[in-house]
Amino acid sequence: MISTAAARRAYEGPALFSFGFRPFFLFGAIWSAAVVPLWLYSYFHGGFEALTREWHIHEMIFGFLGAVIAGFLTTAVPNWTGRMPVVGAPLCGLVALWMLGRVAMLYPGILGAAAAVIDSLFLLAFAAVIWREVLTGRNWRNLPVCGLVTVFALANVASHLPATVASEAGVRLALAAASVLIALIGGRIVPSFTRNWMKARSLAPEPALFGPVDRAALGLTVVGAGLWVVAPQAAVSGLALGLAGLAHLVRLARWRGWRAAAEPLVWILHLGYGWLGAGLLLLGGASLDPAVVPRSAGVHALTAGAVGVMTLAVMTRATRGHTGRPLAAGAGTLAIYVAINGAALLRVAAPFSGAGQPWLLGASGLAWSLAFGGFALAYGRMLTTPRPRAA
Image 1 (cartoon, one colour):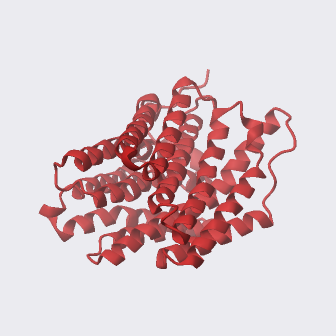
Image 2 (cartoon, one colour):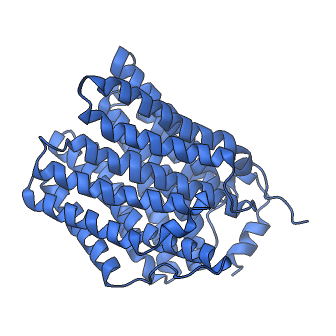
Image 3 (tube, helix red, strand yellow):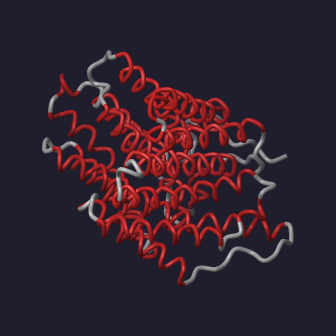
């Protein structure tokens, strides 16, 4: 069997389908930049009846985030397993399923139950691909990733159920899976990339190695997120989430991200991970006392903050690395990072702002679209053209 690198070199089709990250990062970013203003326009002015709050939630979690997860894992899993990557026609098929889901969710009134079936196909097929690759490659270390992707896919199915309790639980289950994925994969790449950057500059001490603090943070996240899925208003859920958030902030401090303040491609990873800790803390506070901490603040610290910042951190770095560009952030990339963190801060602040909430929602939505639209503009050429030949 040829190697992963050889398989990619042998591919002769369009550059866009030579790596999983290329189409999924590009189309996911464009869709994300479009969904928020469409939802805000419908929220403030009315319009297309399909653009409901539920549509907005679904498309940001299962549409946008689902695409980014697919882009990351279809690129990372071949490196983990040494198996052939999903490129060419199979990758086109996955992208087509994702696009069909986006169209179907715009016309649920016409398609009826078929819209849910069409939308569910992509994540279920993607989960099957990841399971096949990891099991065939005997890459047992990443079985938890397979499990989390499956949970995410099943959460999407649950979100389509007619019972409101089931559909809301499905959304919480998806956010729980996303939080654990960030904790698991972020816990690998953030200290690793930081350590590499510091080694190249002979800086010490380096990020702490994996140990009891990391295990505690992961365990508390699984417990806290699981309790929140089944009992979001219970005090025990709030306590577990709060402890998980604190554990992640302690874990983050052990990685010494301030030492990498000179390189945005590194410190943005730490900011994204910091949003995970803050989001779990706020979500825990909302479970304990929603009159003091609005639930929306915790949810959006996780979605706009942890998901938004961490996805852009990974998308920019992976795109530059896999397309042969220098691992250094220019002015455009820095502007993207500022915009996404501004979007998260404004969205978390909105439910605390009283009469100013509509203005903060609008400003947050604008910043979000600038961040992901900016990514599509700044990185679109890298994603759609072949890797530059070495001089």
